View 1 (cartoon, rainbow, N blue to C red):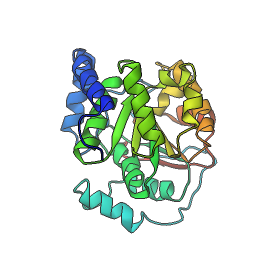
View 2 (view 1 turned 45 degrees about the vertical axis):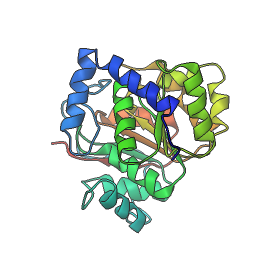
View 3 (view 1 turned 180 degrees about the vertical axis):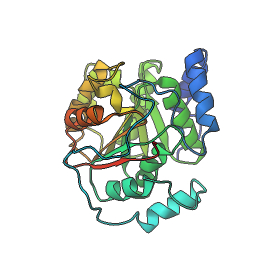
View 4 (view 1 turned 90 degrees about the vertical axis):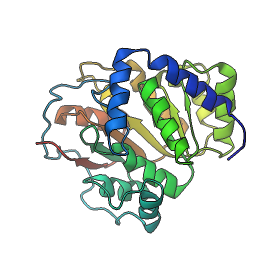
Length: 271
């Protein structure tokens, strides 16, 4: 890791200050800090239909029913040494193993259940760059800060970061200096940004709050519909969709819209 302050990290810190002025973001950040090593949010950044109670049953998606292996020894070492945890929570091990095997995944679990751990662990253990699309700046900044505190190199790209700082962050990502690069969905539609993604060696592509892509959600985000272009520009790496709120209809829409290929689907923690 390079010494001295980095433009991207300083910009992320400034964004943290301005973002927390919003009361709704403040509520979400307090929820993150209360969760056990899980920066998942409450309430969700977007709300799909019938979010209060979700069924445990898998949808009839064409999904893989068997996994190639359990999480690797390297993944378990990251869980213990980096995050100080002895074992995975329900659903996490399957998602980590599937990600390590190069499969697409769709993980639906309640806020605070550790969905981020399920893509952080393989991202750290496997090396390379994990690109994460996240819809809320305050939460994105908080996750980047958490990873940096753990000596994991991460940055974020969003509208509150100056152009010069964004260019420096992109250069670091292209040079292989980052493990995680978070970006706001509107960045995908910025002129020339998809071409920028083609210069990155992306090993995994993560879509957080994935229900925002669905037309069946109450707060559908049009910018999320451009994610397919970003995935293609990155060379179509394994894709992970993560959300706390998705009915069977929304899960189908997520898988279809993102072009998930026989995803390993796990829905846990709801009654």
